[in-house]
Image (cartoon, rainbow, N blue to C red):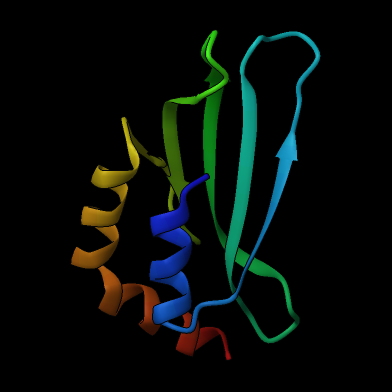
Length: 102
């Protein structure tokens, strides 16, 4: 999941971790990917992708939420293409934030 986003983060040398969270009360699954470390090794930013499975077993993404460090309101995207467009547009700001954390 989010293969193009992972390739983008690797190309820009931004460290990340990923995990699946399966909430009990809702049918949607949650995929969380943290990225960008500070000096202490804590991750500053995260993607939260809410998805379900179709009857054929394919993954259908409902929404992707991007929470950057110090942001009050998260950015919400419908698909990975919109997310990548935003990240490519703001790559300088992301790497600048990571450099300040070090």
